[in-house]
Length: 366
Image (cartoon, rainbow, N blue to C red; front, side):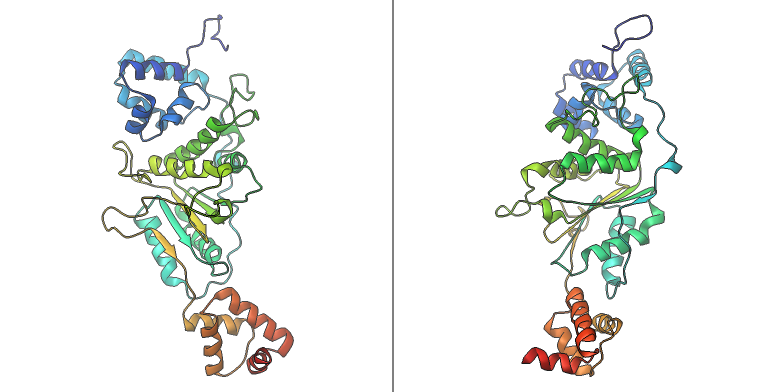
């Protein structure tokens, strides 16, 4: 057991939160609902397995109606438990993981819609879906570039079924807060249940998800999860995460709670308007019950289809393809304006037929 100087037993902030909750006759779930968190998150904090930022702690203790001496004791314990200061902000990259922005043709309207939802409407969770090669990741990268200077941090995480959910969430959290910002015990070593100690199971994974969500509430961040379909379970019901990636479902729920728009109903009463945004990108999106804005009823997910003819013409021109207007329009219609398909056709035509569309079409009909 850690002790105060003089070998007096250490009463932790988590202990005092639990005592206050019991005095207030609240369950962990009830306190979590009032503060905008889940009951499991309250449990993690009470057991000292995660040290929340000061603003988050204040929201958690507000429903407890503590007396001034009780609040003073709680904050004294919290200050005593604080780890070494995290690295300065300059040591934490502003943008991490965002792929290079390629040429974007014909997506001005979609880009403007996403920008409005995220920047003007402060939508906490946005979805972007479409078939493979339709340009989802390219559009999301362009969105990150456009909004880059409007967020404290921009993070891009490509989901991969071969990477453990805990590892993915921990990596993302570290990139936001820095190694020094992760919880540490008084002597600077990882504490029990700390993400670095390798012993965490279900609860610590949930803790990581909710720690990430809490950081998104405290700081204005843009977080993109790409290739979401890679960790969804095949079959029915659609949009369900694989068992090993159920932490992602916990993350979506935690983000909704923390940012003021829950995925399972109205926002918690204590939740503030969203400042951060979680963008989900994939061929298929997870089941999120609350995609809609309460004021307008409009869904906050965007389904991408093929680009318009004018934009498709530019794609073919960039690929060095020549041919009559009628031939180009016929090709665009054949591939329904699919950007990647058009790029591949243009490249093949350039390599095999010197960019002559007539010769390509003649050969493809033989």
